[in-house]
Length: 422
Image (tube, rainbow, N blue to C red; front, side, top):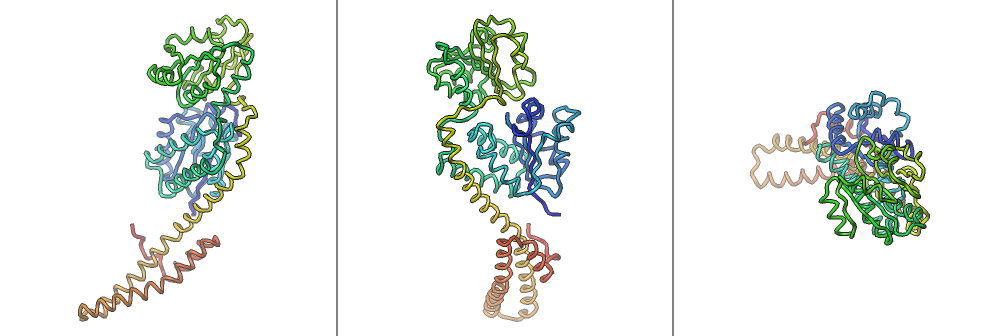
């Protein structure tokens, strides 16, 4: 049975945030699940990507393992009813579709905010986890390095990454639009992980705002605040800072809501309080919106306003897709070569074995000079005999007929009995 590269995807396009947060995986969960996949399915080329917008598995196998994989993910998450969520997963059974999807995700074409640069780092971390778990074989190594090179080309050759149209900048645009009539809006940023740090850096686009940041690890908050000129609030004093803030941006990893309705109900809200939840799982109870004056946004309902940067990115999409196609074609050619390579090696081994046997048989009494000459002649003959089937195999690759040609040459030269070199 032929091994195929496949994918399963749960994303903002197929599932709302309340479903995605149930399936979302942190780094330690990803590594544990990779080991389970290795143990249960003997997988090698496997990649798990989990962000606020998607949880996806890419893998190579003869069979469709999507249902079994989702069940194992559910087991890791302690979900007894994970089968009820199968409908939210998109499954890519065709190798070409799975590869194209991974390219599109990696370049930011499938991001909620088009071209979001954060996905590039998230893909790199997913690849590192696969490599660390010994779940990346030659296929995945080559595929990922092709993706990284493609990303570099897109940055250098297009305007797709120009400007700041990431999720974090979309947050800044939202804050700006909703605080237009507020003099020096007071903003509190809770959590400076990857997204929180990016939001903090984009706060420079709100020069009139008074920004405070708080984080469980105070040293990290202090390092970012020192660079950007913000005030640091000790994490134990976050409640008091929340009461004072006009805008609270929460980007904190916690399975239970960090900001609750009960907590916010005790605030003295004179005009409004804007809460922005950038966490998956969500860190703010949705019922806080029941409180007068409270406005809540999460990663699903943040929408980037039309901006010059976004327009440039949208205009660059055809160029990005063209570069992706070139990269996939290059990768496909490499894969085809890899498909015929074992057959070529077996053919070489088979002919070399015949040559050595015949040399041993007929040159027992030959002197060194004669042996060297005949060895050279027979090697040259072997190379010429090899040339035609090798050329035909490579030509068959380009016609997508490699499997048929491999079968013909294998039967013709009886290569099944030849063991591949390690």
